[in-house]
Image (cartoon, rainbow, N blue to C red; front, side, top):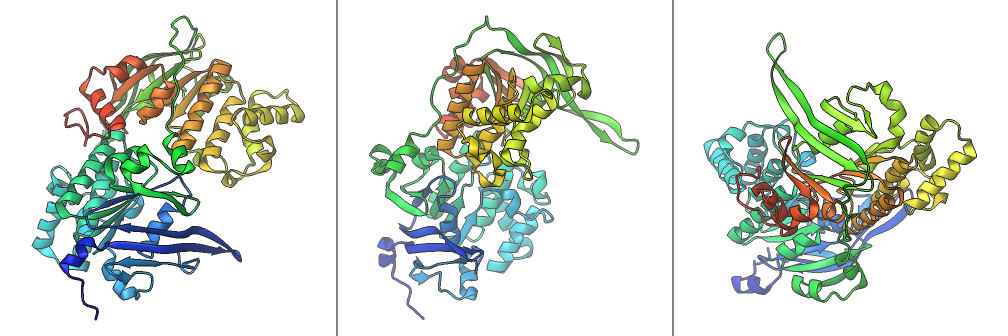
Length: 552
């Protein structure tokens, strides 16, 4: 058995050393290289960020460390992964299991897929303690409560019996972190741990991770595409694209003096530009007054209504031609419900008028003739595009319903023009959605809405699932289309950087009510309410502000 290095040696020796790592995937007789001769080191107590866009090979590199890839379809043509001097790639499975979850742990992007929906929080954390530390009964319970306290879950005693679906996104992510820290690991791998979270929760989670790292002298490999987080949080950074690391250095070096063209491209990719100038003289396209969407809570044998969930509670809104109203707030604040009520996709109380017509009493059938002028672009382009239809058919579908007089050639011409407008090659209209990247799919969803020449478009988080550089392109595209066709946008987002670049008016929502509203410029520069200020600090400075206004 090899002697463990002395303390003096470990101070200077890296905790993890990845040397010349390659990852290949074999499928259908073909081999593709996902990671190409990647090398990096992580020192004890250091945070290394691995940055790059979707498909750059970040997650594959991270999963290789613990051999979590789908072997034998995946293989390692070259490389070593040395952890405390042991090569993890050649380690027998039994020895590797004692490293996994013990010395090295991992937090994933989506906690819901990593937590067991059928087991309580207590059982899931208890399982880890039992497996690795042989802790059961009262000592295990005490340790679970200590961990939940550590990760900032309030009243943990009440939460022990809770199931994952009963927790919010931020709480689920905290439970994931508690599970990862249960065995006091030496290295924590965090794979996009804040992507799916609200900006306020994201700031809280990052603050928590930074505190825990200092407390336990833990090293971290932090995988993200958000450069703001890296700047705030990491010590050193590796920039990755197309399976290769193209630049490595301290955060200061890489951000102030980037050497590689790709790094410069990433740093320049933030959504920029100015929203359209506010103009009160422009005609009103959509107006809502005292809009309410209440969902009944029923209880008892007779299913009597005992209360209501007030998703939207008395909101006034006006949208004008060529203008954008941005609706911001945390998850569950009622942003999307408001958009769906205005679009008449769910029923609501209150007055809604569209192009001078009062539509609040209109049935589904009565709305049908107006649908072409009232379009929606959803968050997830993959979920809203049919996988069985070609892109041309998807875009033409609305024309077949609303403009029946068009011949096949005229329809095809309109589809080709719509694709050109959104920056896609019309020759690709015979292909299917799965053949496109996320950013291209979002362009297809926008083309589908635009082909009908709408007056009002509801955009529900249209950029949240996209990389930074693609986000910036989609924002530019939406701005160009707006000025070209004089469109009224309702832009729903929790990403304030994107709202700043697009909206000339902002509504800040919380618990179904308006906290603050007004011209975007004054809200971004001088927010009046605590909640708005906390949102701004979280979005622009990644700071968790301690205020009663922000939900945990």
